[in-house]
Amino acid sequence: MAMGGELRKVLVVGGGGREDALGWALSRSTQAATGGVELWFYPGNAGTLRWGRNLTRDELASFSAAGEESERLTAWAVHQGIDLAVIGPEAYLAAGLADRLRAVGVGVVGPGRAGAQIESSKAWAKKFMTRHGIPTARYRTFTRTELAKAREFVKSLRTPPVIKADGLAGGKGVTVTESTDEALQVLEELFVRNALGEAGNCLVIEERMTGREVSLLVLTDGHTLAILPEAQDHKRIGEGDTGPNTGGMGAYSPVPFFSDPVREEVIHRILLPTLRGLAAEGIAYRGVIYAGLMLTADGPKVVEFNCRFGDPETQVILPRLEMDWLALFSAVAKGNLDGYLQSCSQARRLFPAGTGGSRVPAVWQLVPQVGAALAVVIASEGYPGSYQTGFPVEGLAALCELQQVYLFHAGTRVGSAGRVLTAGGRVLNLVGVGESLAEARARAYEAVARVRFANQYYRRDIGYQVCSQPSGTLVARRGS
View: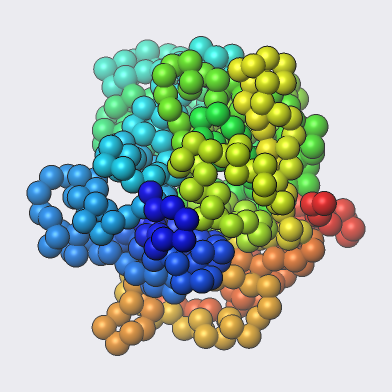
């Protein structure tokens, strides 16, 4: 990796709203401000061109047609002299891209294939949690050949279960069933009709937990934890959290009911056991651990682990933190996170390494300087099912008139005439920031009203669970 004031080349892998937000954050780093950073995106989108250059799939194929995608991308990174890679999508991590890049000397924010199993295999993750005493819902796993046993298990449950495809399914592999009949129908779709292909070869059927959900992301180099501000995602396509799951239709941060005592309980009961468990199993983990949590009457429990930044959680977390993200990511990649945070004014040590035993990692909290942020996703009508693309996006220039609003592109591309066109299911992320969630929400929806394209769809109730509370209860706590 490049050191000191040398030119640093950074690759952000992915082409969604998360990657556009990561590019925005990296472009604001101290070194980038002096022109010392060259940002690349693969494959990127129309928005990432604001921060750097896009490497398209066609360009990568013309560079090297041999080998699988991760192998070709690694060869390109060596040829280009990439120093640091930040990998967004879980599929690349599960395919071992981080392993390949590290093997050729590129620093990486993202776990290797072994660590990525916490997301790429729901069955592996459940067994991992059981082995290390991490609280989660009770469950059983079934393979495609065990359909009859799975049916009997579903019928034996007192309440409708949650059914999860073991493999990666692009955010569409989890069904929270409302009845036994629906659960049996899901089994039929996945095991008999093969609705999710190989991702559905094995299913995790678990009890449905009751409580409120929170996403808590941490950065780690395998030895130290840096706790990011919490967020809440809106997974369902319909207002009032109805309809099928999507990759996420909006998010907000902070989450008012996620108190400091609950955060501390999550650290001690979930995050530290997870880090220790990975180390005990010989997994060197450098990247993001995303804990999807359910705050139950019995305490916080893990709904799922992800091995990367969330989307759209990233889009509301990054604007709240005035960090030098290039320096922070470099510390993660180099295994020097604790050393870097000791000199970082935006970090607060919660307890040092060695507290309670020499094997306890240092734990830091990244303190937000912005009170609140709320993101609304504008999608293509029909998503998460079939939808049309190629429609011109109007009104983007008008967003420049708004204060405390950020635009992050997701499914967009630049057309032949230089116009921004829709190119995916989730198209744009409009993020409002402010002292309170109510202010952030108002700004986000003001921005949404200025953007339009044919067949657009968005939820009008992002943040409804907290923004409907009485006035005065939503002011975010400012870091000191």
